[in-house]
Every structure is written in C-alpha cells, then in structure tokens.
Length: 92
Image (tube, rainbow, N blue to C red; front, side, top):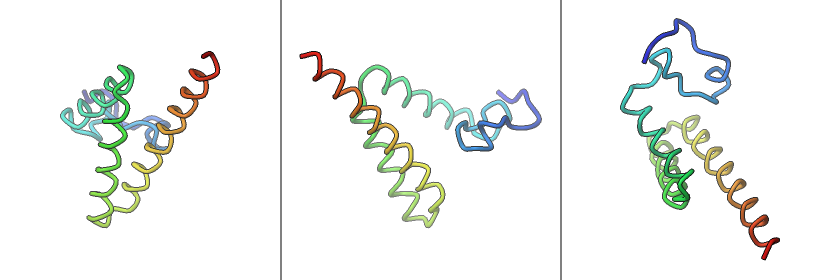
C-alpha cells in the first residue's frame, strides 16, 4: 500500500490514517474499511460501540490523544445519526 514518501495534508490534520505512506498496517487499515462499510450499511450501533470501546482501552493505556481521537469520531457519528433521525421523522 505504500506509494508515497510523505503523508498528505489530511494525514497531518488527523483526517487520514496514512495507508499510502505505510503509517498504518494493512490489517489495521482493513479494520477501518470494515467499520466504514458497516456504518454505510446501516449497522451504526456496532460501529459506535466499537469506537467507544477503543476509546476506553486507549485511555486505560494512558494514550489520551488517541482516546480523544476516538471520542471525536464517536461524537461526529452521533451528530450524523441525530441529523438522520430528524430528517426521517420530519417526513412521517
């Protein structure tokens, strides 16, 4: 997967895991892909719970920056889900 020498700007602002530079293993990248696929297929609850578990695990290892990234991902997903609920209920 490594085909670049330097990571992109999205990687530098924590919007990309850097698969093109080898910053993430193929296995970990495929886990991320699976989470996105599950979310897009509507299995949102499991994705949120998995991220919350990862956040707690990172915090227990004192990896607070990583835990904060997971927290931000959970918050972003919940906002998307709340927006969908509002749109769905307004057409009922």
